[in-house]
Length: 180
Image 1 (cartoon, rainbow, N blue to C red):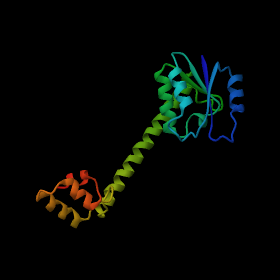
Image 2 (cartoon, one colour; image 1 turned 180 degrees about the vertical axis):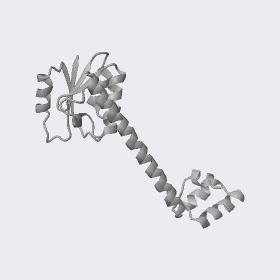
Image 3 (cartoon, rainbow, N blue to C red; image 1 turned 30 degrees about the horizontal axis):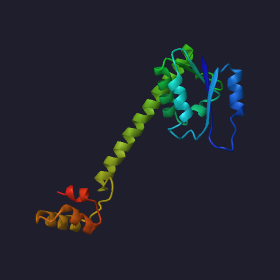
Image 4 (cartoon, rainbow, N blue to C red; image 1 turned 90 degrees about the horizontal axis):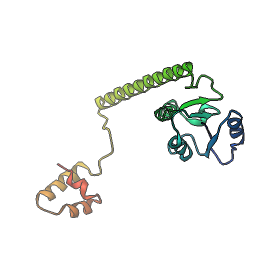
């Protein structure tokens, strides 16, 4: 079965051209929605993936209708593949997992995306290390000053209830309990 997917980002846009192209290409059923491609939660796409079975082909007019980024595209294609289905884009002939050439191209694309993620991770890790070396503190700013922490610990050691100490500093009791 050929299952089409059409998406536009805003209510001002129309799905008509995509739906016509998918029908002309032989789509037996078409899932469609008006939602930004940047959103991870796309209900029609989720329903499409749930309906897939062995041998089905997911058809889109262009890759950008299916995914906003390379990572998102590869994730969606992996879910399609897990269900035993294939993928084809009308506007991107190389994106066709029903052919050996298409599978090769998407494998190369996946390798490049993984390489890019690794480079980003390495640069981020190096940047954090350089920042720490300069004395930059990572993470959230402490809710209590050093003086307040010392005072709270003294009050806690004296047996004052944690909830009362927390209330006096306008923080949760967990914040006081974690102090050491």
